Image (cartoon, rainbow over all chains, first blue to last red):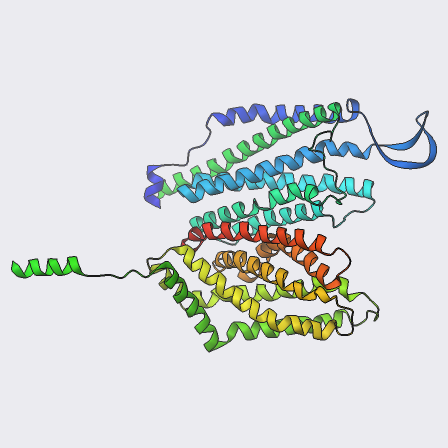
Length: 254
Length: 249
């Protein structure tokens, strides 16, 4: 173990870090643009019908325009980014199992951390929608249920990491769980298509969204992907620096 | 000189019969079964636990009215019983291997590690099925007497079998992982319940469908079984592939 470290210190601060320093603020700006677009550019969506005809905003209408639908422009991109982060977590997990390099374990762990952030954000935005559109805070609907299970798996991943001391064993077990947890992602993604009675709308299909909605979602998606990547690299840099310091300390002790 | 040549020839002709993978599997499985038949440790503890869960159900349902439609709930109750009982069994299945250093002995044998997985998963499956053979009739005896159980109820054997295969497969992988962690009992539950959830959901819906036996129940039953079976195949394959890494870490 020590011999390995003297031959190769954990390196940090490669070129993607400089990219991340640009992409993180840029992603924030693009996300804000997406946020503004959701309110100013995308047309409001007709929702639940109002009893009879009502005068809203000087117009006689018989369906209520949904302001709560605006959360969708964040909800879906955030959920997709969480799936992508989970996929990367599993990918780096597989790389770790193949090579047993500490670097990939770190990558996998940080990808899962990013996934956790986005999974929690998806749950939070989803709950807002559920509350104002379906009238309840929680509903045991297939998509919600599978996504909750996904969140629990990601949390279990970190509980497992904390329960093991040995470095290599922790890496192997965490990698295995990150790969196994990926099985739930396609289930979660497909469940609204497989069970059509589900209340959760399916938007990723032909005619699911109008052009302006799709545009707004795309802008939010790009912005959030940049934010996710920037966060990932920033965290990676920090963790690798810490590992490097540890390795250097051990080197000095010898 | 001649002597040395003779020994060299003898070495060349020495025959090592390498046991087939299937005989390795049989040997490992027989070891688990024999150990269980001698100590009866897992079967008794799981059986008693299942009975106790039924008694708890008795208290939980004690205040409900007679005409409460227990048929709608029984699939879920039965599967909750199976999940908790299997958690108990899976926790124990590796602890005696670890305590007595048996696992290290097995790992010293030059065999494919996935055989260890298959043997262990099979023995877990057999123990779970043995407990279910007792627990499911008991469940009927306690809660479903005098109710109008549909005549298609015997089809629940299919979800029970499919579900138990999945539980044993993924549970074997997870119990191997958690045996080396701190607070292993809780750790197994934390990992096992979310991962097995899709399977549980499918099994509950198919079991309930055949017990209630409403018109067109096959439209619920068949897709649910297909989902459960697909989940089984994926999970057992993934566990099988990854087991080598887990058991040697």
